[in-house]
Amino acid sequence: MPELPEVEYTARQLRSSVVGTTIRDALVFWERTIGHPELATFLLKVADRRIEAIRRRGKYLVLDLEGDLFLSIHRRMTGNLFLLPAGWEIDTSLRETDPVAWSTRGPSFLATSAVDLVEGSSYSVDLAKTWYCRVCFNLADGRRLLYTDPRKFGRIELWPRDCEAVAFKGVGPEPLSTAFNAKQLTQALAGRKSAIKQVLLAQEAVAGLGNIYADEALYLASIHPLRRADSLSPTEIELLYQGIVSVLTLGIEHGGTSFSGYRDLWGEAGDNYDHMKVYQQDGKRCLRCGALIERIVLAQRGTHFCPGCQKLTVE
Ligand SMILES: [Zn+2]
Image (cartoon, rainbow, N blue to C red; front, side, top):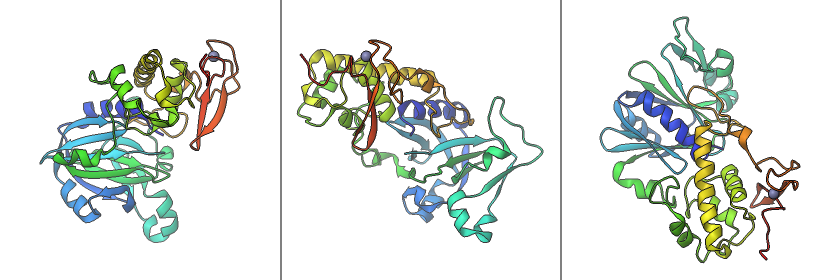
């Protein structure tokens, strides 16, 4: 599932690629991907809009459009964005010939002979068979921005610029902004009786962390994921703050974590998975103390920690 680093990495790629380009129109192949407004209004309002800026808010990718609108894209489990060069055709014939298969797979993509592939991109006709495209934004210059999502949990919404508070309800402070610090984290954790990992996943105390980076940040701070959030000492909160900033910054530098379906704008995998200290490392030895990394289930999420240096009870 894409977390802050994966979304930020995609945002940076998009910023250097599509700002200033106009969305000619959108093709929606799976209606429920559009969360707001209803489909007909979405299609009408998104057409012929210039992309003015690209931002990120927590795990949301944000495209600011002319006319004081913005698109928010939340990829949930398996959503990805691909930018296709001009020259790819969309084949929607499956919609008529096999509606059941269509609802799973969506359209297929065919490269014409004139396709000039972006250097270093991983697009290929074979790969296109597994894209599961749900929405296609046709850009005025012939390129296509695809939203692909095999599991269909992701959502795309279009909002007026002054509705950000509604669109990003419950999304806490940005961990990589200069406004975020240990003091702010202390206030956010005060009175929270849930396990610290659950509080981190809930987005309100701090935005952008999911299962991978929460496990890694808690490991760096030597804090057991089941510790009560309001039981952390000032020193532990300072270490957690530093851990969060560190794992997210490194995640972005490594182009994101691609153990499952995440790919960048050009279809490339990020290599942050090679740098995991605890996430999915159960059975391996801790790099700090040599104990065996363990896996438990917390709120239905696999949770990884070192029993040697992340103690549940503090002496
Ligand atoms: Zn350890």
